[in-house]
Image 1: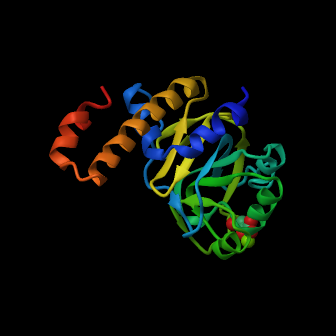
Image 2 (image 1 turned 180 degrees about the vertical axis):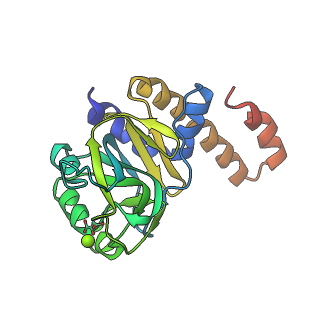
Image 3 (image 1 turned 90 degrees about the horizontal axis):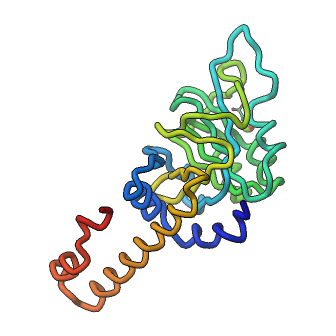
Length: 220
Ligand SMILES: O=C([O-])CC(=O)C(=O)O
Ligand SMILES: [Mg+2]
């Protein structure tokens, strides 16, 4: 799939909410909840998923240090998607990993859990989205179970190569085999909303604009 040529610029123009609405209209799951930019300037992220599945540390040891394999296999523009099951009591991503990811040209990291070293992300301008930040290290608390496998992220499935879009509203995942349909539908919804906003700004009444575009039925 020629993702960069065919889809990247189009997705950068769309919002996560356009994409979430397109997924709803097409009966697909991909909208997550509660995973937000961890620092003010963390910009929008678009890219293909490299997944990391985290599990609790214990007597079975992990093969790779958490996150390192994902950074190694990722290509420039990819997004690392970390499933730590929503845990908030321990980090599963930090500043050293962020520096490694930044050096590879990775677009950003989205985490179903918590991260640490937020000042480091600000310093290097690296976008990280998570449920929160925490000071406690991942070491001895969690470990990497697998890289590039099916994961659960904010209640939705993510497979390696699925497409991630993240902005200030949150994170959406587009199943890779539905990318064409979802992007086309999201663009159609974006155009309609732009027209609605233009009319509202031109002074047309909200009631008139709403009934003309039938917002309530727009996803049918
Ligand atoms: O130990 C951790 O949670 C990870 C960490 O701080 C880093 O990558 O800098
Ligand atoms: Mg650190």
